[in-house]
Length: 307
Image 1 (cartoon, rainbow, N blue to C red):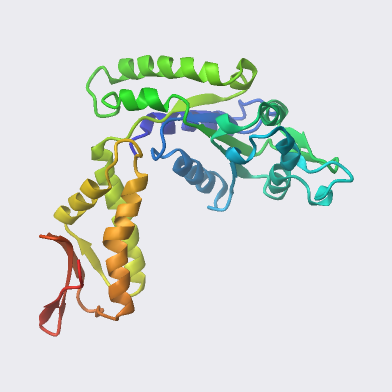
Image 2: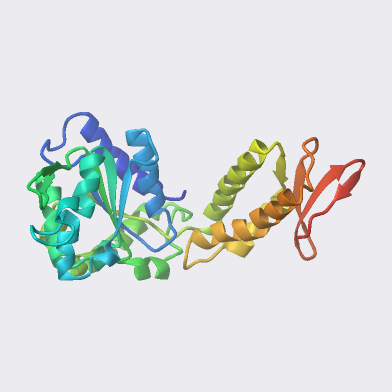
C-alpha cells in the first residue's frame, strides 16, 4: 500500500525473467529494499512468494542480526567436518535445498558480518553455494531480497515527499533517491551493490495510506468473524478512530496493526468467549464517548459489550 514504485520495479524484473532475458546463471532477481520500518518491505516479499510460487510458505526468512560475528559464516552453510552439527547442513543452504523455488529474505542485511556478505556474493553472482557436506545448492530459481534501514533517516526528514505530492513527485523522488544512494554506497561495498538486480526505496507511508490499511485489516477481522457465523460492520467513524490511534509517523503501519488488535479484536474476542453474540444480527462498531462501541440487536434490544 503506497509503494507503487517499488511494485513496478519488481514487476519489470520479473517480466525479464519470464521472457528468458535474465542471466540464466543467476537467481530470478536480487533486490535491496531500503526504507524505514513498517512501510511494507517484508509484506511485499511475502506477497511476492505467494504470487510467484503459489504458496505463502514459499519464503525463507533469515534475521541477519544473528549473523554479526565472523564465526556465523559456518551457520549459513554448515559446520566443518568434526564440529557439532556438521551433518545437519547450513541454515541457509539446507532451507534452499529443500525449497528451491522460494523467496529468500535477509532482514537487516547491514547487520551481517562482512564475511557473511562475501559468502552471499557467490549466490548472487553464480546462483549456487556449496554446503559443508560438499553439496551444490541451486539458487537460480529463487528471488533474493535483502532489507535494510539505511537511508531511513533521510526518508523521515523528507516525509512530505511521497506519493501524495503533486506534479513534481517524480523529480523529487529522484533527488531523494540520490541522497539515499549516497548513504547506501557508504554502507555497502561496490561489489555487493553491482550484483543486485535493483535497489528499491520504500517511502514513508502517509496517513491516507493508513486509512486503506485499516480497511484491509478490518476486512480480515470481518472474514474471521463471519467464519464463526457473526457479521461485523465497522462504520467510517470507527475506522477513523482506529487510524487516529494507530498512526505513527516514525514506525509506519506496525502500530496500526496493534491498534486493531487492542481496540477491535480484543473486545470482540471477550464477547465471543462470553457467547454474547447471536448469528441473526450484525455487530455494529461505532464511536462513543470512551472509545469504540459494539452493539447488536438481540431479542428486540441492543447489547453493548464493554468498549
